[in-house]
Image 1: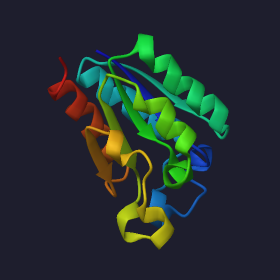
Image 2 (image 1 turned 120 degrees about the horizontal axis):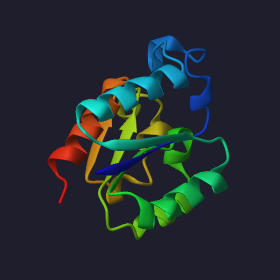
Image 3 (image 1 turned 180 degrees about the vertical axis):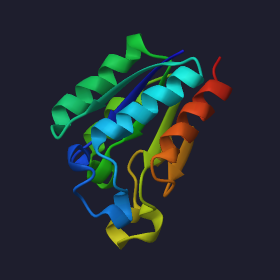
Length: 143
């Protein structure tokens, strides 16, 4: 099973952003964990991170023909980026939404996700383990 993990804006500075919210791992350390979990689950994973919304949308389009599931953490784009919603909307593969922090208990504006209506599962506030949960979910629910 092939999985695309798409991380959004500002996640490249993990480890330097508020560790009480996002943990102390860098994006490279997070991706290393994701690749390790994928090996344990016998999944093939590609991790990507971008601060460019257009590039992120292109990666969503790439998922149409190349992967069996997608893990998305659009980060701040989650709350307003309808272009990302529209790029994911026509996918027929499972999509799982992940957030390191519990966005549902943070600022009011962070409580809205424009992608939630598209996802098969959502893991928020579990730190890096949310990605492991997402991979396990996709493995368990694969066709």
